[in-house]
Length: 405
Image 1 (spheres, rainbow, N blue to C red):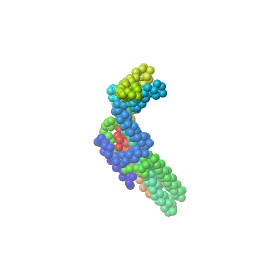
Image 2 (cartoon, rainbow, N blue to C red):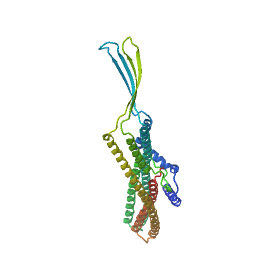
Image 3 (tube, helix red, strand yellow):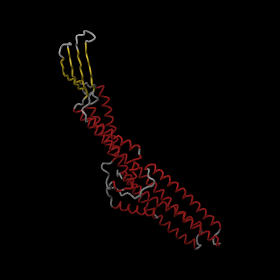
Image 4 (cartoon, helix red, strand yellow):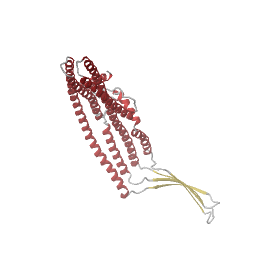
């Protein structure tokens, strides 16, 4: 009864969803969101992406520094102690560091910010992909559960028929072969129930591996979102990758050579042992010159990244539109298939009821009744599976639209 209740409730939600599309908030599906959160915590890729946040933070802090590399400290001393011994002494202490030029620093900061934005977009796209996998496995469990419920209902009905047949065999109204045939059908239905239980356990096992949850949450058909999520995680991921490539190219353009080195030194000099010591401060600047041999490979690599990211962004937009159109077509097909499956199930049930009445009245044989029961069972399975397929079609359309639970 519980399975019938949530399937009925799912159909009600489906009608409401198609009658009035609505934008979805993240809190719209608490059960689905909890499952996605659990899968996210178990995902190695998610752990890696979140750990990279520290890398991007460190990169942004480094880009804000005027120092382009590690500072150096130097110490030099000169003396004639081992030669003329006139008391000449000279000591120099220096500090030097490479520094960014103003344009170079701004380009580095822009690249660091682009790296951070790209990482966040990749995290959102990965979470969306994981949500799609959770949706698929949730509805796979639902399909297996419905198959088991229908198999159990069919078994109970065949057992009731077998009891009626055996009673009539003992009364002499039916032949022993009819009793044997009825028992064979019962045994076959028990095998079907066992197979359905195995498939349900397999589907649950795959769901547990993905999420770590022992059972699926309350499953409702998702209302269809009115618009594409803005920004769509898949498009945002490829666009931020393009922006990162462009920022990298700007860094190459601004950094035509190695960073200049600025140093400051303090020198103490003494000409003889009796003479006074003098002190002086020096400032030094070393400016490297860029060459075509150094810059051309870097520029070519940066341009290659831009061309690749541009092509991927264009392709992603085309694929996204195709996926959305396909998901809408599949949803429409699921609705039409459900209508046909429901009509067929209704007719087969009516047909079976008439055959049962005729069988009890002795007007139809057992073979006709069993064949009608088999057709009714097949139609019932098809109807239940089509209801699950409709729920999956809703989930796939929201997935294509970029709706994160």
